[in-house]
Image (cartoon, rainbow, N blue to C red):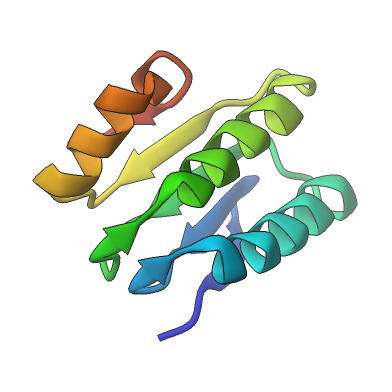
Length: 102
């Protein structure tokens, strides 16, 4: 499954693919940045429902979108992250930048 992007009530919803690696992360970042700048987006929500693997480039995707949306007063949220993804987020320090929703 590929990533899916949708704006709902000023939230950019990004359903992430099964694997987030260097190749997929550049496309996710590019499309997210385009939508943040061209649409009325106040916050970004990353949906990890389908994600089984994420390397350091995935951390860069979240950190980069946090930098971009925080310039506009927005936040980044993570939903449906399994324990493995949560551990990666904690170890990387991203939990200080993004809010993990239960």
